[in-house]
Length: 272
View 1 (cartoon, rainbow, N blue to C red):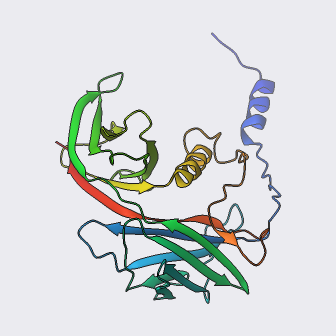
View 2: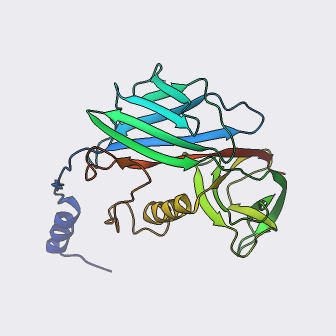
C-alpha cells in the first residue's frame, strides 16, 4: 500500500496553482506608411479595375491595422498618362476604374501623404498560362498526403522569376512561394503543393505571377522571416524588409511594401 505525506501534496498544489501575469514592455516605434500596390491583370479581363491599400505599422499586440485616408495616389505610364486612385467605400483602399495594363510597359507609382512623396517604377511583366494539373494521392512518408502539381511553360529566351499563391480551403492564410527558372529555362515548370487535409471535392486555387528579380529577392527574404524558416512569432527579424518604394521628400522615412505589376494566371482544381 502506497502512502503520501501531506507536505508533498501541499508542495504539488503550490506549483500547480501559482500563476503570475507578466506584462511585456515593448518599445513602440514611430508608425511607418505601408503601401500594398500589387497590380494584377487577371487573364480574360481588361484589367481596368485596380486597387492600392495604404496603412501604417502599429503595436505588436494590436489587432487592428490603421488605414491611411486622405492620401493622393496615382500611377503614370511612359506616355505620361495618369491613372488616379481614389478612396471608394473602405478607408485606406484606393481604387481606379480606367487603368490600362500593357505587357512590358513601365509604370510609376506616386503616393503623397502628409506632405511627403513616395514613388516607385516597375515594368508590367508577362505570365505563362497554367497548362495542366496532376494529382498524387499517396504522397508523403506515410503515403497519406495528396500532392498537387500545377504545370506551366517557362517564358522563352529570358530569365524569369515567378510568384505563386495557393488558397487551401482549410487554411485562413494562403500559402506563398517564389520560383526561378535557373535550371528550367525554356522548359516546363510546376508549382507543388502537399496536404494531408484535402479531400475529394475540395477546391484548391492556384495563382501565378511573373515578377522581377528584385521582387523575387524581396519575397524570398520576407517569406524566410515570416514562414516556416523563421524562429517563431517572437523571433527577432534579421532585417527590415524594404521594397522598391522611395520617399523622395525624406529618404530616411521610407515606406514598407512593394509596387509590382504583372499578368495573373489562375487555376481552380477540384480534388479527385
